[in-house]
Length: 261
Image (tube, rainbow, N blue to C red):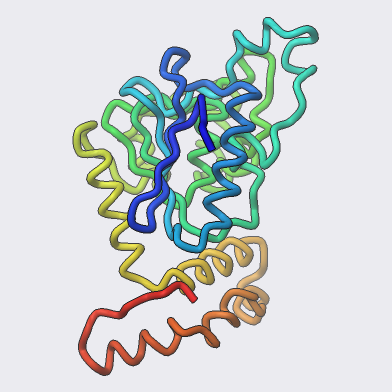
């Protein structure tokens, strides 16, 4: 499928998703949401894709969030536009994708752009990246996960300070607070992210998905309930070919040959 607002590439079990509207700092409008919904559907359904990397085109912005100029030009403004399938960028409301997703933040990640990164599993940021939820400053609310995920990923007072003022934080501050995994120069951003992806792919893809499912679903449970819960993907791992291959490769002192089944 041809995309106008997204660059979608597949290389060696890695899906590369690039928001491609650099002229508006990769802000998203309904047609781009629809394309991203299709991209994430494809990634989730393709058994050969084990990890996704999402970034923005250019070096100014990952995504500046909602395309407010587009919204303002529509009859009825933002309120007249339907909520995008799967949430902002087709991903913030998608809770059934257990494959790992890495955000390569190459500039501003604001509003919905920040919400996309919050929905990812790992965040690597360029040194000039900035994060923020400015929705309240333009009469909106960060309702695509921002007001829900940020207080779960930062200390409450820090998160509320950002939500209630619209203030930005730098990549370095995000790293200090534990929101970002690594901060690197722009030229090193994609090599660093690819290194994270390669480290993930040295593990069993089924084990990775089972681990993500267990970690995410267990977050809302008391510890004892989470540890005693039965997770569907873990049961699949125990019966899988990879579940046999891992111990066999260890015993034979060789690298495992994962099949993802």
